[in-house]
Image 1: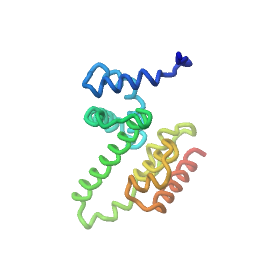
Image 2: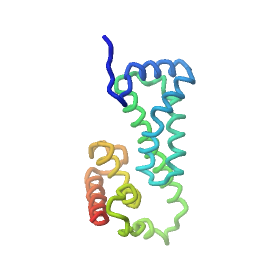
Image 3: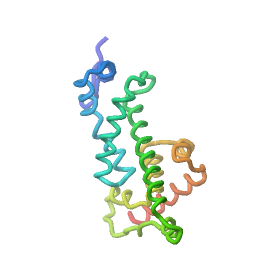
Image 4: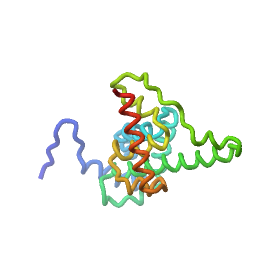
Length: 184
C-alpha cells in the first residue's frame, strides 16, 4: 500500500526510519531529524522563555539531550511528541535551576522584589500577541504557553512545575486577564 501525502505533509514512515538509523549512531539521520524539528523546538523554547538567546541555547541543549536519550525512544508516541516533552521538561528544569541560583543571591532585605514583576507594557499594538505573551510575568507566561498554546492540562502543568492545581489555574487566569487588557 502506498502512502499518499498532501503537500507539506511528512512521511511518518520516513521519520521512523530516520529515528531508527539515528538510534544506531547514524549522524546524517540525526542531522535530518534536527533540520526537520529544530524550528518547532525553538518556538516552544522561545514562547516559554521569551528570550531569543536563551531559546537558541536551550534548543541546542534539547538536541544534545535527544541524542543521548534517543536509544530510549520506543515509538509508543509520535517522535515529535516525545521530543516536545523533552524540550518542555528541559526548559522547565533550566527555569527551576535559574530560580534557585537567583534565590541564593538575594538577601532577606530584598525578598519583596521576588513578589514584584516587571510592569506590563500596554502600548503594544493590538495584533502583536507574541510580544504581549513575552511580557507576561515568567510563571504566568509559562503556564499560559503550556496550557493555551501547547495544550497541556492543568494537572500536567501543576505536576511539571511542582505547583498546586489552584495556583496553575490562578496564574492562567492572570495571564489571560493581562493579555486581554493589552490586546483591547
